[in-house]
Image (cartoon, rainbow, N blue to C red; front, side):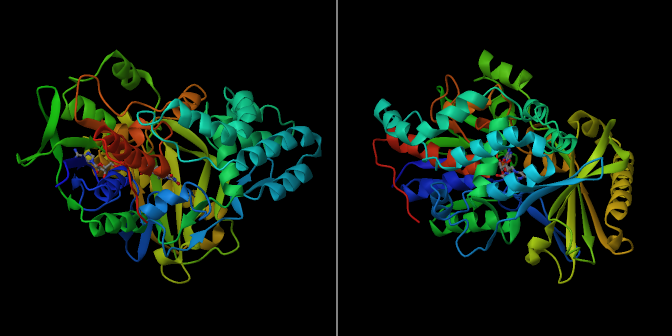
Length: 500
Ligand SMILES: Cc1cc2nc3c(=O)[nH]c(=O)nc-3n(C[C@H](O)[C@H](O)[C@H](O)COP(=O)(O)OP(=O)(O)OC[C@H]3O[C@@H](n4cnc5c(N)ncnc54)[C@H](O)[C@@H]3O)c2cc1C
């Protein structure tokens, strides 16, 4: 019999580790606090509508890309239709003009030049960089624990075309780049599309390259179906999952993790423990902060995270067929949430996933980044918390009726999720929806080195998921589950094998 592994959390990282563990003959058991798989990659039913809580774009959907192999191994996409949007987002400027962020780079370039002929040089520089990045299909990297300098050398020729854009843009934010557009609409759009002050230009360029390669589509059926497909693969491989099982403590004996204790007091021992749950709770609660050195303290004290979200979803008895799938528009009067004024709103019209709503209807979803502590305090007074949710919902309905008059009188469902919702259902630190914020400071480091999956002084223990992959997202979560089993196989002196 193979060694036993306990995995905390049935999010995408935990399920992935479970699948690869089973493919390599380990005896795996996942403990999940919720009653379903997926973690943040989830959806919920409200009346006849499905509110999707996650996937907008999934890297690795093109069957010919290297990353697609991981999704095939996890059984995540087989048999699913993938939608590749023509326009990623329509940005309506304050001056009345609009800009379509086409996913096809040639079309994007033509559109931008029509809008802003004076900015031709900067437009061509940007689209040139997207094309250059898109020509490189990133090989699946081996974790550094199992790779040799020779592996690095082998990768080098494939990565060479990336060197120029990486060196040139590695310290530049999208906002700083936006300053170079003289056209007011393009300047406004590139400042506002990713509403994060230090969002790296490179992250935007990579995203556009994947979209142009039709490698960042949307799997029809949505987020929970995607998670359930991986859960199905894990169960088919003979893995075990225990739901409604909150891990309270990681058991350590003589500097080695030997199992876990659940909140019901039961203990489950294993040769190896992998936490695919929230990083902060793992280090500071389940392990009581005993294995956190200065570096880890500094990280959790000061490294920025993706702020949590307020998400408002509306079920509408109209398809809004002529509207773009995602539109960002300026609000006639700002919406105030947790003391922060939001001057524009971005709405996704989910009609591209007909499985999620009755025929002829749609779900509109909008999200706002917000401050966690405000919501934590508010939640102590449940009536005020509910009133705040209602008042945000009312403001969103008014704004949406203003922008899409056809929905007036046709809204059949309103659903509001707050940072408390995300915290309660996934236990993510401060309700964060994607872990560590990607910035111009950590982008290079995270791409080249990644964060440690182990803790100092603790044997037989690994951490995976979005809290060890800055920038978060589903592909890094799945990749970290694969990498951890590669490392464990390497330590055990056995070959790492995968099946599809
Ligand atoms: C609105 C939204 C949109 C997003 N859009 C995209 C997108 O378009 N593309 C993309 O790639 N990514 C997207 N993401 C990000 C992506 O969902 C996450 O980065 C990814 O799902 C993280 O996976 P994970 O397995 O690392 O963590 P999680 O999903 O947080 O999984 C952790 C699991 O551990 C469980 N757990 C926690 N504590 C315990 C405990 N004590 N005991 C037992 N179990 C525990 C949780 O319940 C959870 O199931 C989005 C996220 C959100 C919220």
